[in-house]
Amino acid sequence: MNNNFDQENKINKYIYREKNLTPAARVKELVGTFAKSLPMFVSSKNSVKYLQNTNLKDWYTPSIPEFSSEILKITWIGHSSFLIQIMGLNILVDPIFFDLMFFYKRVVPAGIDIKKLPKIDFILISHDHADHLDYKSLLELKKFNSKILIPKGTINWFNKNNFINIKEFDWWQDFIFNFKNKIIKFSFLPAVHWSGRKYAQINKSCWGSWMISANNKNIFFAGDTAYDKHFIDIAKDFEIDVALLPIGPVEPRNIVKHSHMDSIEAVKAFIDLNAKNFIPMHWGTFKVNLDNFYLPVKKLYSCWQEHEYNLKTKNLCVLKFGQSIQL
Image (cartoon, rainbow, N blue to C red; front, side, top):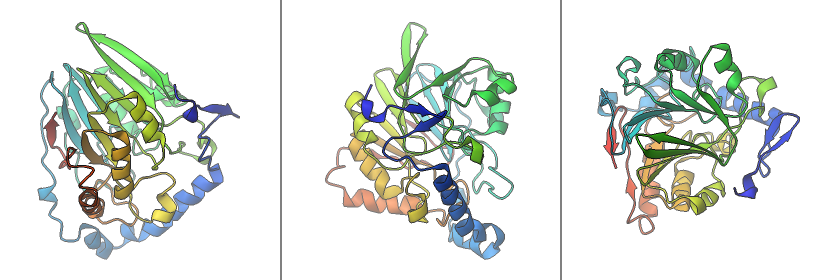
């Protein structure tokens, strides 16, 4: 365990030592973001501006996944949701298949129809925000009786809805599962973010990132996070084959930078992680903030070219909604 990112439980709140923004500061950030992005949701002109002549058909390739896969296969469902298939196991991370709220509609449908999923063995949750812990999606997935790995402090809703096979985690805790005489390990790791769906819940549960280790591969899922030195710390403990990193929202940067990386910072994080493959996420799915649909990806390509010398042995894999990649 790296002590730089230990958690302290003070008044039942999880404190990130170097970025301890108060609940009031978090609310100010949220209100500021909402106020600046509200025109997008009430103006048809802004809807057109958001898409900026983008043909969504070019970005949407809905798929029906295989029953399972021995080799690593990653399918982007949209936002931060992925189906990760490895070692004959099916893993969902931060699944959201529906609209976020009545005014946060999906711009692009989920890349996989929730009714066409294979049996899901594991579900990983990074934190309790509504775009990562989606109640409607989880209730539909309940039929699989999956093992659900969640941050500490988020179990109440699962208990109220009679979920079983729930395990809570603090940072740097592992869960090892033996499947057909093979080992898969899940490690809950730091992120620079916050938690809470209501003011009274702010920072009363943990948040973080996940590492999946199986078949001699390490897949890193960053969750929601600002850029910070925790990426360097994580790289000390893992040789990372694939990094799933958020690249949005980009704007308004002065408001969201404490909780969310943009494309430029995501490239820095990828370099810090010394990973082999970069798959971007957390962009284009919902009409939020001041970004247009393609802005995060456009900035990502530009930044990648600027760091081309340091990245010449690396791979940037920008997936379409529903697109899969085998690694």
